Picture 1 (spheres, rainbow, N blue to C red):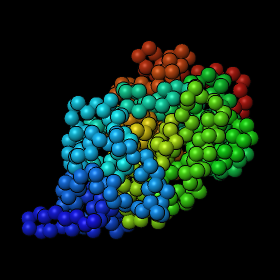
Picture 2: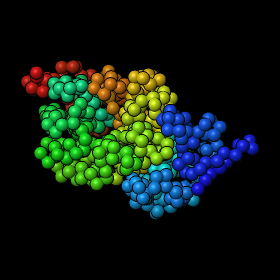
Picture 3: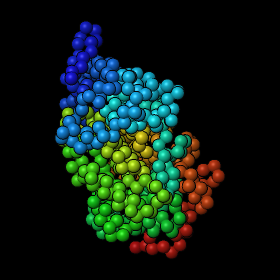
Length: 463
């Protein structure tokens, strides 16, 4: 089906739904690289006008990727709940935006409509929203998950303590993790991206993190972010695996590039649940996404990168995750050129994930060859706190020495706690106070020797 609109006697035509979605997307380098972007601001405006007039029902009649060739499209169709869709089924995309912004559209209403929405509907409405619109709606949507603590409660901000090391050295990982804990980071997860993906190293890392957690009685969870097949083997070997991690994307072909499919993710979820390491009913999966992943794998099928990103959220929500985060600026300027595009993408991803019912976090980050800096990250972090983001990722000095990109520092988490009044998960907050790292108001008061003293003569920091 083709679409058209007129601006000052000029008719703009769009060949199909995915062309309309792509042309309506705010400017970003990835869509330009893919050759799907609008030719300029006038065509983009025309596409946004046509998209605003499009009924939401149209997204149930036209697929951007055929279900005949894509299991993600089939999953999206299976997830759709007509009863949940009914309250918004008569609306256009533009009317849907207005409905989302109404004060009476609150947490209860947004939660009820969650499975009535498809990723393409959610992506579409985000394309005609300003940043404040994205923030206002996302802030209303609370998505709470649990493992050893409670993540996503309104007015709180959790953090992933990311103690990566370029050679996966145990002493380096432990020292970096303790550095983050000394500044109150790690309630979402203490999670290591391994430099290699061997089973022995994976088991060593999860065992190290679990020993650190147990010795300090930390009410949090740990994770080694190796491939999900490695995690399954580690579970079979009896390793202390808390969370089953995997990067996911919005098409079957892109997921095949990651070495996964939906059945494998289901197997991983069942393996994680079999260990019963968290509280009863705990969420055991952790997924990462990022705009441009499908394009970089030549698996986008002509669909714009933001719509492809939101399709990945259908994959994630199928497996009841504890955590999902978009690594928003990690792939590079070929996909998000500068700070402005990264900020927009981060808020889009968070909004879309929350609307689809995901416990959404953001790795506020950029690569060193992007036209961005740490002040852009300050702006995005502050806006995400206003939007009620579930968690962010922090590393020592905002510089990940293994992945070679710039993220947030543990000090940035302190800024959120003390200036923006965003305490961590309640169980973790109590722990910080009990061990003397923070006062009753959440301000950091501990000394660097505190956690190492609690470790006693531990060999975690030994040679």
